[in-house]
Image 1 (spheres, each protein chain N blue to C red):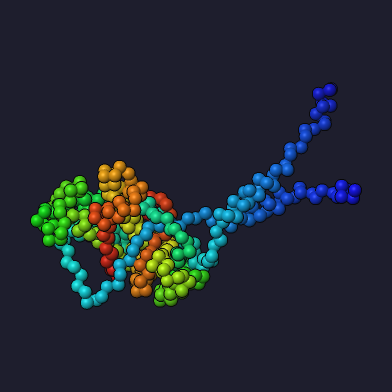
Image 2: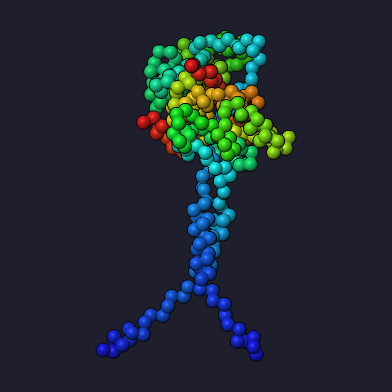
Length: 196
Length: 155
């Protein structure tokens, strides 16, 4: 009957050991999920290729200088908070007439809710946002501007998705999303090389 | 006096037998969720800008990181850190090639480069990095940010 006399192992300090480990993992754990603005760089261009000529009215020019000031369309100083609205107004303008767009194989933008101003963009597929920054621009400003421009497209896509499919863009199926990103509101943000 | 006599006996001790179980449960949770930092930062921890048009980076194994920020000894100018040392812009191409060597052929187009830059860095540095990345055809990039309003950046 020696077995019966085996003393029980004292487990009182088990909690202490577990706590020690727990605190170690608590301290070392990093809960950061990687998030950020995803962009795709343009492919390297052949220097001999002549870039296509764009009509000036189809280009939304955003300049950011080294003092983090934004100049839009070459004549209007703007705050970051107003940039998104201005970009939406430009993309969603849809001012092109059927005759203008025929050569590009497009028809009049029926989903655009803009002003149809003939001096602004013809069609969301032709609207190009050109972003020019300076080497001295701060990265925070640069990201803010990028964010607002991407945000303009997000807002437009959401609006369209809501109207057509009754859901937000992110909740659509891949095919519906692709339809919007290629034919309805393609994201055309072109970055010029920064000024020195 | 009978009241006081009773109290002297004391309350029974709270049973703590289940305490280790609780603690172990927490422990396992943190052990499973913990991600050990792979690289040690040689630059000051970059203060990321905030943005709201963010996407989550899926598949961490397909992401390579470029850190941009100030040196720890506060020398002026932006420093670029690849892996675990401070490098120059011209090292980026070999860095990308070495990252690609660790992946199979099919995964190479999916590789993303995440730029973790301090909000005070200059766009010039970022542009230099982007030009290098473009030259090696590493076109998918991600400007790492924290979630928040973009308007917080300008203050």
